[in-house]
Amino acid sequence: MAATRRPGRNHLFIPGPTNIPDRVLRAMHVPSEDHRSPGFPELVKPLLQDAKIVFGSTAGTVILFPSSGTGIWESALSNTLCRGDKVLTSRYGQFSHLWVDMAQRLGLDVIVQEEEWGTGADPQKIEEALRADKDHAIKAVMVVHNETATGVTSDIAAVRKALDAAGHPALLFVDGISSIGSLPFYMDEWKVDCAIAGSQKGFMLPAGLGLICISPKALKIAEGGTGRNDRLGHAYFAWKDQLAANATGYFPYTPVLPLLYGLREALAIVKEEGLENIYHRHHVLAEATRQAVAAWGLKPCAKEPKWNSDTVTAIVVPEGADAAKVITHAYERYNLSLGAGLSKVAGKVFRIGHLGDLNELSLLGAIAGAEMAMLDCGIKVTPGSGVAAASSYLRENPLHKA
Ligand code: PLP
Image (cartoon, rainbow, N blue to C red; front, side, top):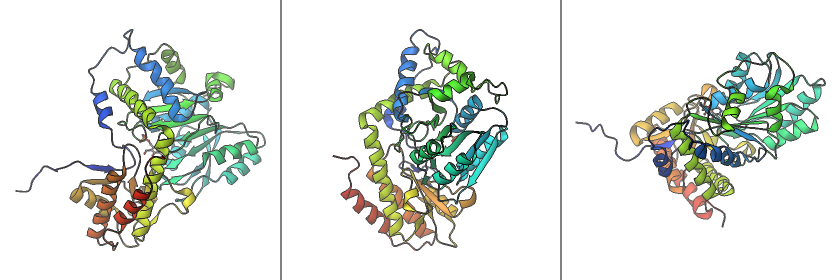
């Protein structure tokens, strides 16, 4: 009789949710408690301060919503913008597409700059559009920092320069869902107004906690600074209610207690490793993955090295091969979860998520599994070539700088 048990652990290499460190799992194993108790603020108040570090902010204000990242997109738009407001954004993958879709459905007038999938936001085009907007009708620029569908990172510092060069006062909203906590992110330096994150990626937690860091400028506008009364509707996602409750260390509604304890532990881990070390480790693991891809004779979806993401690599399979089959086979035969190709790139790419809590040998497991699955599916890569290239690179390049 075939065994039903799958021995060993699942190798989770989708680009979020990511692996949860055992310490975080243990920290979340808590009984329920009274979220209105006098002791509760002792948990909440430091969390709201400590989380800012991961955003690269001291000036910002963090709010935690029981939500996935998508809810935080909505909170950013609905707390700061009015019906019919113009927003400028670029579309180059499934997530930048979904944010456009949300903005349109909320009643915003969305100006979309279409970019080829495999590239990212074009600061020059953004600057031109802002310069042409003489009466400042554009109220916000929305950018997905790391397009998880294609493995592309856009240059937020350059986008900020574009706004400044155009002398444009639009708010800058950045989706950092698959970058914050893994890739360099400097909210204050880049003058980001709303930086959006989700718990299930760099924060190494389950999904369910949406995080936003808000600049003083965006907060002022949310508090009524535009003087307009045709605001987009919001109730559950109102920052005002959150801020009033948070000021005393509470929430306006029942918080997700285990995730708060998990966040406390995750932030302790981040502090121990150090953000710059974390960024370096992500770069080394990403580069090792890219070395494997090159050794296989394949290409990443990112069109040029400047677009390469250090959190996820989307690997284009050869013409005629089906990436979806590789993913299914990797899961069924080797208990390896690879990321699917989404929308336009479905069947054309599989993704290796290399973010969160992982090291050399965990990554090599994914590379070996991807290689075996490709070979089993008839994709002619040289056996062992990806593992050899990645392991040579990893032996030469320690995860942390000395
Ligand atoms: N934006 C990016 C860049 C993402 O990678 C994701 C999810 O993978 C989302 C938005 C949507 O986030 P969520 O699934 O947490 O709602």
